[in-house]
Image (cartoon, rainbow, N blue to C red; front, side, top):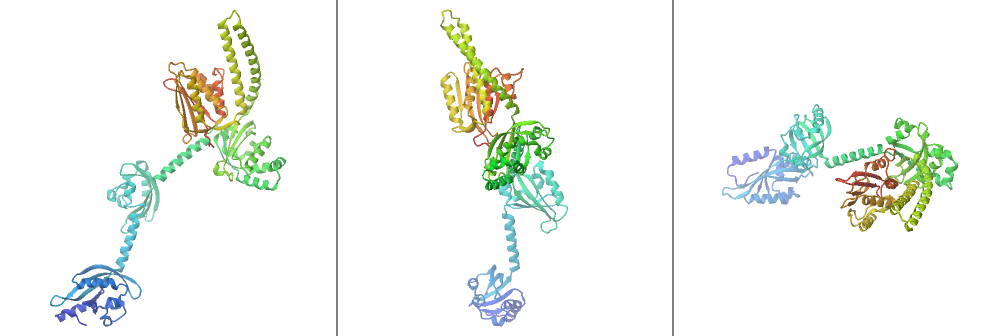
Amino acid sequence: MSIEGGDDECFRYLLESVADALSDLVYFKDSDHRLVHVGETYAEIFDEDPEDLLGKTAEDLWPGEAEGILADERQVLDGEKIVDRERRVTHPDGTTHWYSENKIPRYDADGNVVGLFAIDREITEQKKRETELERYQAFVEHASDIIAVVDSDGVIDYVSPSVKPFWGYSPEDLIGELAIDYVHPEDRDAVLSVFRQIITEPGERDTVEFRFRRVDGSWGWIESSGVNRTDIDGIEGLVLVNREISDRKEKEMELEKSRRRYRSLFENNPLVIWEEDFSETKRRLDSLAEDVDSLEAYLMDNPDEVRQLMDTVDVISVNENAVDYYDASSKAELLDNMDRIFTDEAFEQLIAELLAVANGETRFRMETVSRTLDGHRKEELLDMYVPEAYADDFSRVYLTCTEITERKELHQRLSVVNRILRHDIRSAVSIIQGNANLAATSENTLSEVLDTIQEEADRLFRLAENARHIEGVLSDRGENTETIDLAPLITAKVLNYRNEYPGVAFEQQVPDSIRAEVSVRFEEALEKLLSNAIEHNHKENPEISVTVTDNTDISGWVEVRIADNGPGIPDHEIEPIERGEETDLTHTSGLGLWVVYWIVNESGGELAFENNEPSGTTVTIRLPPADAN
């Protein structure tokens, strides 16, 4: 072995001895890229003696990487150094290794480059650690969650860059700060409680939700999962994974708010409400319908089968009003005594209900009879509704019971009274009108008396007509409703009244289209309210405002408001309507408002009154929308 260009023999041997002793890959090459000296470590890669490798090039030893190696060597032979250049190569045994290359030119006595000297240090393990670091760093710093480390005093030691898009801070803004200072005051006790719990023992972990202050001062919700890693070098604190959950939390709070609201509406509804599961009943009815010629006839002939089918109905819940309605002490007592409520007197109605379920009817109404737990008989109007999502299996069915015992009795009495009044009043009116007309054509006319007679006749006639309307409203309640577009109806009515009363200023706010479920007599109620607002307004500049609003998303109603600037409807006229009954002390002077009240009720709606400041009354009709459940 020899080194070209070396004049000092001792120095040459010294270099060769160093090359043999180093664990790095040490080798010398001539200007033709051939090995002229090889260290022991280099030779071990090829399982060869160093002497056997002399004269070989990169193409001989490293065919897969030869092109890159030769390019580096040409650079060195041109007089340039290569320092700490990293290269990945594959050993003959197929393993991959990383080296840090250091190559310098070798010169002869005249300063000409005659070869190169190389020391390649293996950095495979270091490269693995760097790669591992890059992988974990990429996970931590580019994760969608915000990763942080808090020491045992609650000071932030580290926070990932993902904090910026969520909260607006850079990591430098937070490092060194007390984490609790950024927590909403109302949430600090809960956060500190969790912190104290998991800081006590390495490995302890827990999760807490709280509000965190953003850089702009607003508050956002986060879910923070922490684990105690105080025993790990390099961490020595709590590792926190913080997930921004503001959108989810807002939805959860809105959902909970809606749940409480609708649960409250369910529990505090003045109607008696049952929530039932008819899925097993529906399945048995469908199976039974396949085996018999007529399901209705079969049920009529087999009362025991009807009872067994009704026993399969699972009552999920009832509202509080049902407890009082059936004289129960609690919901549990009511649900345990179902057999005492529904009596054999309602046998045909139960069959009708079962047939409705069998036919897949999602809306059903019938009159039925039940008894309270203390034995009182009740006549009821039963409404069944199945939400669309449960129309296939009837696993959720809602039933409302309205007692109609007194109403039916009142209807019977009112029908008799109405027939008598209508006959007698019309007879009297005919006589009055006939005599009034005769007196008006005579030579001795008493005009004032005749005017009074005429006015009384007209009043009695209107009374008879109102009585007829009352009878119609009560007898057909709930059975004659229709879905209409309120917009064209109200627009047309306002136009007619505007033409008929040019001295009245009308203001109208009606959308292009708004559909609602109304009584077939709704137009009559609308006319009575508009006429009342006009005829009782004696101001110099009477004003009438008609507004129609779709509030189904807020209150569940379509609302029609008729407001005037007149003297207003007196309280003693409104109180009986709001209470739903008249007494000797409080009663209306006419039947007009009662007719409106009954027609709105027939529509399934509500009637409300309020002052229209500075003067007048606003009457609000609330109607169920066309797609109301």
